Amino acid sequence: MKKKILVIDDSETIRTQVGQLLRIAGYEVLEAPDGIIGAFTIRERNDLSLVICDVNMPRMDGLEMLDVLRGQTENLPILMLTTEARLDKMDRAKRAGAKAWIIKPFKPELLVAAVAKLVGT
Amino acid sequence: MRDDHWEFWRSVITETAAQVLSHYGMELCNPADWTPILGDGDHVVGSVYFGGSQVRGGLTLCAPRELLDTANPTNIPVPLADFAREIANQILGGVKARIASYEIEFSYQFSDPASRNPGLPVTETRTLVLRSKTGEIALMFAVASDLELELANYQPSRDLPSLGKVILF
Image (cartoon, rainbow over the protein chains, first blue to last red):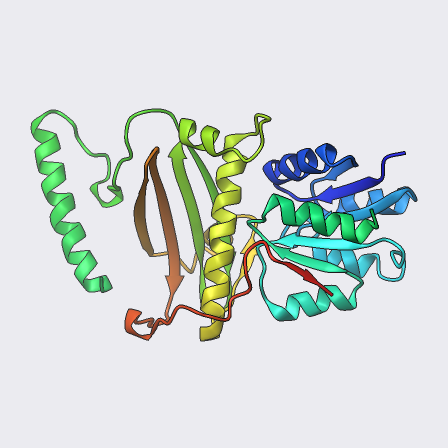
């Protein structure tokens, strides 16, 4: 069975790009356009292997989403994919449970390699 | 270019353009809004906004549809306005990282900050047209700021995190 990855980003271009890369790499991909729908999806499903999440999004940003989900995602690795490069935001994400951070624009092969490492494939 | 120098040149260019274009029957609606024009063809725009205690404004990217279509990172059609906005978003992210060392901070906004705070007009706008082998891209940077930033003080940061590098916690 394919491992399922949730991609949360307000940019349809990024969701499409990341989704295409991951599908080619053999994963099943779900998408959400903001932190609210992302958090809802994470709570509703117990079969996700990884979440890839933007930081700056309307309605609820990625860091707020991590705070909302604090304590509920211990076994779910979260990779932040964002234009943000501030160390204090990285620290906040790390404290809230994120496992990795990539600054956009990203290199496809590095993203896929990081995903493989985080999901253990 | 210093603002007062730019104001001088903009006035001269605008006045001249309005006069010449009027001669050929092309009246400018508002000469003050004159901006450089990209080449012919269908163009796409995407805007992002930012706000902070010291600066606020927006960055708009405008590029030919064909150029963006070619640059689409997927082989699936994507809404090109979204792609343009995402490129502007990534440029703004780089700007944010670079000015952080000057203790200038702002956050992303999802609507024009000027519309929510009309008492603080965004008065400074610069348009930068970048040329590539396959087309031109215009960046319109509108900013309100009382900061006095001198180019002579700018030092490209050597401590910026690498784009695309995976940082494992």
